[in-house]
Image (cartoon, rainbow, N blue to C red; front, side, top):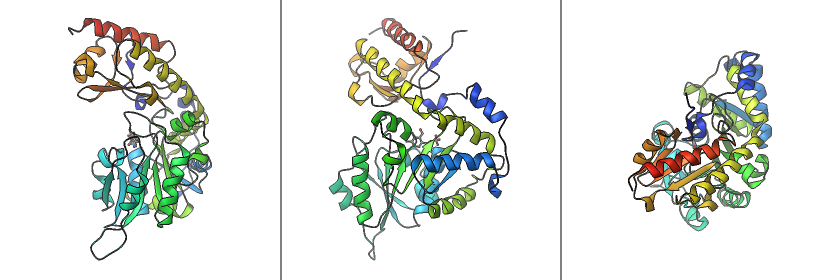
Length: 346
Ligand SMILES: Cc1ncc(COP(=O)(O)O)c(C=O)c1O
């Protein structure tokens, strides 16, 4: 049977043989009791990668985000989020429900707050106000565009926030893609942020998992909060072993990004509308506007030609390159798209 080329997300990546082998051979203990050696090793690697004092392995990006906010804020406070961020839109209102904070969404069209607007929206403590106690960022920005946010801008936000005594949290689900695109070391990119998360289960190809890094004090609290949410591991080493393999080869994300650029160029040549300057990492946003087609209809038709893409708006879809899509698959995706376009009554 012909293999489906699944470009809906990098979360569809499956652990390869090396990862499965490492999981099979993992030395384990009880991570809640603090003695799973493989979890401890992964957390040490995570802390070093981001240049932070400590690190915690969690179940998912969502759990890292929610654990971070729960650990860095108190009920009745306000946190600033991007209006298009994952934390604000796709985490089942966890910010309000779990942490009891009021998210204040601000526009950040290219993943960047306007610094003056940001400062104007940082609220102090008064009898009627919910004080701002956390600024959140996302890198790469927007799961449907994957924009790489550079250090200089991150540092400006951090300096502003810190001048008001407010910490900064980075949802870095795909921050290693940003690091590769910007040719920046993750610890340098995140030097000024107070805490940062990373997903192991996306481009790194692990079956599950995320890392949350920050100060020893913050991670100490996060460890308890994560336990409260039911995220305490027991023999977590089996999953941490996959994370160790994934972290050991994060620079290979460059391959996915090279393929994404090549695929984006090919799709544009087929007449699809793509802003190639915005293909900065592994995500390609495709506009179908000029074709007069709905994205659901198009993705459905495309699946008949062996390619899966994700509809994101009525007239737009996304494709994400990842380690299970090789060089030889790019011409196959382009041929399928071309056949699909020819088959549609336009
Ligand atoms: C920016 C961002 N943050 C957080 C998450 C959540 O990760 P998870 O699916 O592991 O909960 C995602 C998932 O796509 C994401 O894109």
